[in-house]
Amino acid sequence: EIVMTQSPATLSVSPGERATLSCRASQSVNTNLAWYQQKPGQAPRLLIYGASNRATGIPARFSSSGSGTEFTLTISSLQSEDSAVYYCQQYNDWPPLTFGGGTKVEIK
Amino acid sequence: EVQLVESGGGLINPGGSLTLSCTASGFTLSSHSMNWVRQAPGKGLEWVSSITSTSTYIFYAESVRGRFTISRDNAKNSLYLQMNSLGAEDTAIYYCARGSTTSTGGWFDPWGQGTLVTVSS
Image (cartoon, rainbow over all chains, first blue to last red; front, side):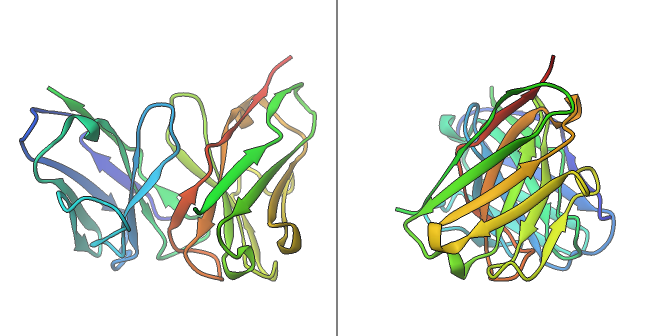
């Protein structure tokens, strides 16, 4: 089973500042990685697939990079509505499909 | 609008059974794999089960294999999850999510709003 580890657990960022979230896989997942955003009381929403492709309707301030075992989600200029928990998910080697533990982004 | 709506959650006694449903609209269900993902209260996301577009292949997480059964009825635009021998560890919000391909794997988009299953006496 591929274990996905996200860091930090919590990130506090001022509005307009950059937020950088990390996701590490226990073995290579190539670019078979997705990112999701989950706001309180809501279902997760797809942000990124294929490690770097924004999903439909996702603002350009969200970007992602990486391959193999190291990935980064960047929110270039944090907005208040970006306060949420962010999860990465690998789909390179399954079952099981696995998620990271999440990073909570707070607005400072 | 592409939409998934889950139903069937509720309070159930330990050892009991429950069947969840997910009704799809706005897209052709038969063109996509489908999935169940759950989230225990205050916890992260856990993949539960996947089924290919034609039900040819089915996969389960180790934690539910032998107790849960995923199925689908493309004619009714519906996905199901039959859950047996439920324990407290199964308490969670259960989301259905559309897969990115006809086969399993891939990413999930969109997700339903979820249905809460609480296992408690």
